[in-house]
Length: 323
Image 1 (cartoon, rainbow, N blue to C red):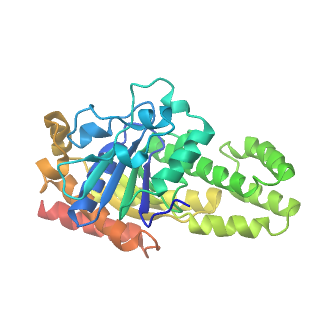
Image 2 (image 1 turned 120 degrees about the vertical axis):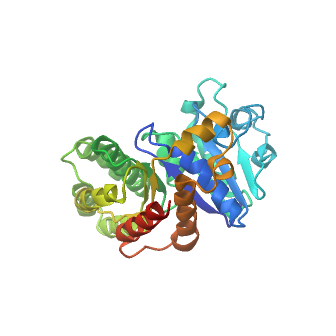
């Protein structure tokens, strides 16, 4: 059986334009700079551009080649970057229909991703709640979600979390055809704004006593890590109160806050220069914020953080004052 001890860090977003790929790339760099063997993978199938944030040209064979050639080995696609300890697996936006790979292809890819030798495996997922993104996000009990502080972005993030948990609950029912059919009917109601995971959980438990307890345990294990990007002030993290309430009431989830990244012109300039932010502007405010996220990933990825929003806000205020 293929296996690896790599810690999987999926990076997702409920919508595009929130800076997910920039966070994924520079977080991977920060983890490698901290002495960790890190692999970052472009899993934005059909729209890959992670290489641009790593300062690399699009000239290497990527996942499109791997998926087309059944004999291709995933580790043969590893590309060395200019950062010691950091390797990269490109996507392949030039291949048609990459965003719609077959389920068996996806299972094979997930199995081989898990086998890669690394301390950290960072995954840049496509924005939104496609089945691909949901299944890659589920490679780890906890994943990192990037959002902005504005209401539409937060609502898209919460919608992603709901779809993610429904996808995981369906996997719990997969071996029982009767439960799976009932679940599919129930989720049509649960996808609306008024639908809750609690109602799905309770009905499934009535059909299969004990399944509710398994779903509770699943929700407890799945503790999303949230990064609020492109903020103007630490006070923007006041949205944490709304997020916490919505996650608890509608999704039966608790969340942890792993970072707040200030709006910083250095980010756009680094992209224009074709050089990673962490290398071009390592002392910029945004780069310092991302290093803080990397530190939290190393210290707290597998356990909850008490008063995480307050801690992130206080540290962000200190960094802003010293900038």
